[in-house]
Image 1 (cartoon, one colour):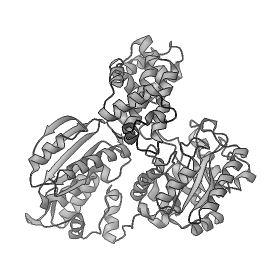
Image 2: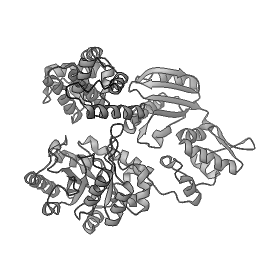
Image 3: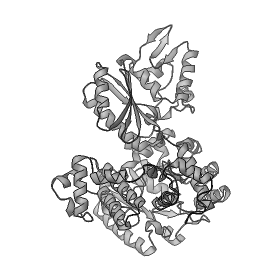
Image 4: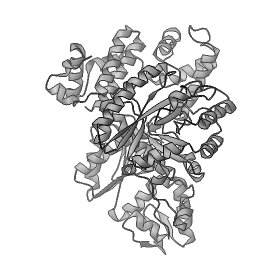
Length: 570
């Protein structure tokens, strides 16, 4: 069992214990264990196999036995029994923004509410108003949260669906039964949230391939099974479709099932204007197949430059391809350094030294350490005294490495009036300042826009972090005039972050191309809180590609000297 699954189960046990009203120390022990396992440097299975798990600080004998059972058997009886003791709908209610375990327990104990549907009805009937800790505002917020959850029901984060899709693809390739196999759909287009997984494959023995597919260990239910298409539901709750086509049909099917629908419609119209019929089976001129060995050849036959999957949203890509103006999109290998990294100095889970070591292993030549500023008490923000302590460690590490540079950075809170969370004297000593909003989200559109613009006007600001503040499938961004903010960034020469956290992916790709066309520069940042989080930049690169960005549009593709020169000119 992989580490992520173990961590998820430990966190779920903590939630289940809270829902049952158990001693808070008990649930906290599982939350702490989840954090400990998440940042383990050693392989979890090796620790279990060698009986050394109990030696890990924070993992006692009881937890060690449960983890050993979970890792070695793939199941934990205690967890299964705990799930059976709680109505399953209570866990669904926890997905509603603003509802935590304590409030869900009150709803269950006092009103007997066990499902989201029952909760919605109770809100409509004003039954929450008399409950302790509730009120009219809380009830209204819960009702809004229910609508939000319903709006995105059946959607999944790109990162989660991508991991599942890769495992499925690797399983199919290991069978030896596929000729070609690719992930398609919105995953291939790198949409930030997706509904399902689409895989296209070719095989000499499609029936045997389908048999192998439905026998994959991570499949929960088989919805439909045939020789050309099989649909399943994974244990993670994600739907997955496998389509098997003839090998000569593969390029056409891959293009068609990559989508989007709007792109496909526009492509068919273009083909029709040229006297060509286009569908998932091929390109046909007078009912004769126009043979294409690859997607590239399909575009060539339609007199178009190749359009990368990320751009296929019918957002001007076909017209650009006709003019030969499809950009050379940024790739992860173009990034020479990373910004927006948190350490144990604030709310990170890895030490500064470990973060630096991992960044060097990943091939970067510089990093900006950007822990939280002093107002962020919720995140152990740094006061001036602790800043000096961190800077001393940074200087020691810079003396240690001749091939790597550590920049003194900060993620400084933008206060409600738009000022930044340190004096000008302190701000002037940082190499790089990321300014972000972390609280007071409910300001008016005019006030919030002005708040951001004032931060942009500050001479010490280099980058605006996670511009809209959205949390995917959890919270909409705050209300701002985003075009006015982008215009301010252009006017003052500030950089906009593409936050690579799979929970944010902010700035939204729909605004990136507009900002790029206005001359705004970007930084692809992991918003990492551990060494593992450094690798999240790949998700940000996908969003940058959807926003039509090239390497030259992104400041962390610069070498260190170019970067320092750029920052000093801002």
